Amino acid sequence: MKLIRKLMPLNDAQKIVFERLSNYLIKNNKIKKVGIIGALNRISAEDIKSPIDLPYFNKAAMDGYAVKAEDTFGASETNPIILNLVDGDEIFPGEAKKVFTGEELPKNTDAVVMKEFCNEVDDFVEIYKSVHPNENVSRIGEDVKKGEVILKKGDVINPYHLNMLASLGIKEVKVYNLSFGIIATGDELISLNEIKNIEKDIKKIKGKIINSNSYMLYGLVKNLGFNAKIYGIIEDDKEKLKKAIKTALNENDILLITGGTSVSERDITVETVKEIGDVLVHGVNIRPGKPFGFGMVNGKPVFMLSGYPVASAVQFELFIQRFFVKRKKIILPLKRNIASELGRVDFVRVRVDKEVEPIRITGSGVISSLIKGDGYILIPENVEGYEKGEFVDVYLTKIISSG
Image (cartoon, rainbow, N blue to C red):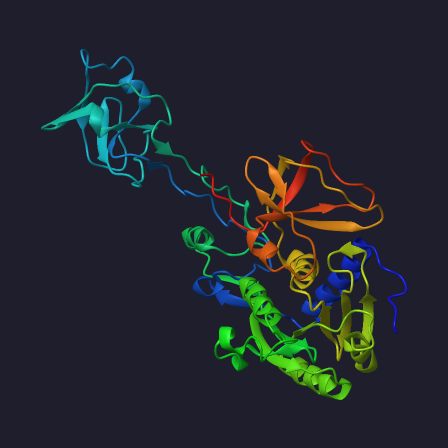
């Protein structure tokens, strides 16, 4: 039996993985400049700074009349102030110009009186409410200042980013451009395509496990904006696995192998990768996800993930997701105690409401915990659990409704 002799601390393992990934991206120029439409849901590979102030001119924030604010002082319903109505790029004391939302203000004006408080009569306008300087005005640079970072490296580009980029005249953005191959290993696996009717086939497939990890990993990769290809199931045979690895790496940048990373004689994934490349990490002091492996084959990163769904998802989160995208973090009190073991990082799935509730499910194969969780807590090696009411950092994996 091949033992994982020493478990590596999570931080050390992440450092090795992240350095190798970073070097691979730089060396192989896995960054692509795309038009902003093509950048949607992809990960920005650069910080983008605003080239100009936004707005780049003072504009009306309401429909109404552009004025010099001091010309309206003292105006009321019983004592309206009357201003001459003009139409030009500049006004003088005692004048006003009709403007619409978004329209540039004429020179010498610093406020807009809402049309609800005005009455236009022939060539003049009656003002029934005074305004202060900058009232109902969007000032130059009020939204974004020139040089301000409006898109950070690692941000997932959403529709609101597209609006901002277009508003600033930015047509293209650099994004990470990667493809992932996905291989599932194990004699115990059966393809989903072999299932015609699960109720009728359940006895026939007894002892077999439907290959579901490949679909989960495919979705996780696509959620990062990358391409993914599933290479099916490879039985516990070194030569067949080597061939599949070489094929997948020839067609992709990064390879994910799920299953065969533990310590039994049938778990051949790590040994196989070692024979054709370098294994840099095998065994990390985390729960779940201890039998994590990482290596390089033909200069390309290979991730060796657990065959258990939850452990595999945790490994993807900590070593791939966290490299490319930072999770939103909130701080909330715990609903109940959480126990942990010193010397190990515990990954705890939680539900989030006004408090944080750890999900009462254990085991690396309990798929429902992935669906029920809103996020997770990481309990560090030097912390022996948390007590009820203690405030903890929660990393969100779902958008939490305020309702």
